[in-house]
Amino acid sequence: MRLAGKIAIVTGGGSGFGEGIVAKFVAEGAKVLIADRDETNAARVAQATGARWLRVDVTRATDVKAMLDAAQTWFGGLHILVNNAGIGHQPQPLEGLPEDEFDRIAAVNMKAIYLAAKEAVPRFKAQGQGVILNMASTAGVSPRPQLAWYNASKGWVITATRAMAVELAPFGIRVNALNPVAGETPLLKTFLGEDTPQMRAKFLATIPLGRFSTPQDLGNAACFLCSDEAAMITGVALEVDGGRCV
Image 1 (tube, one colour):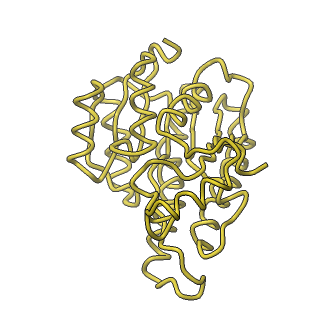
Image 2 (cartoon, helix red, strand yellow):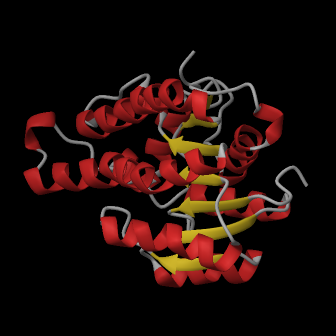
Image 3 (cartoon, helix red, strand yellow):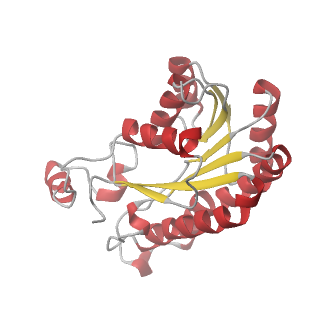
């Protein structure tokens, strides 16, 4: 029960890595609010784990404020914020991505972290503690061709994590990130272009441990970084990638 007594929000907690993080957090004793646009999946995960859920568009300031207010109303506060929601784009030449798709990637992968910080940081400062965990990617460390703008958004997440960690450390607030390799999530097909045995084999050949990241892998890593066991760890982007970035 490493998170006993903790209150957490997990954005994008209705599927993929977010679902794995929610399940692990609840199993370790946390009270969890799932924030997701997908009401069906959010309700499914909540029912399976005992978490609560709220429909949230993380790119809208009003929704993000409502998310933080819900945690306060339902659970009495907040200790952990996991900015997990994210999107990708189909592999393509960098000059070919439509502007509206670029804007959507910037909004979900980048602006959402800014909006969440605006709401959460003042609350964390007031209580003298808090943990923020951002979902970055190996794409921000070792970019893959034809995913230029997704790569760039995740590089931004890593830099933002480090900048936040340095600025917020005096207030007792830790900020870290996770760098998963592609995993068994709804985004896998987006990264591969097409989900075929041949494409999977080609990608797996670049991962020394020979498998994709799983929601359980990310749940375990997130639990550690958000627990008091990691009290001396801030500003890191932990690679959960089977050696992909070595």
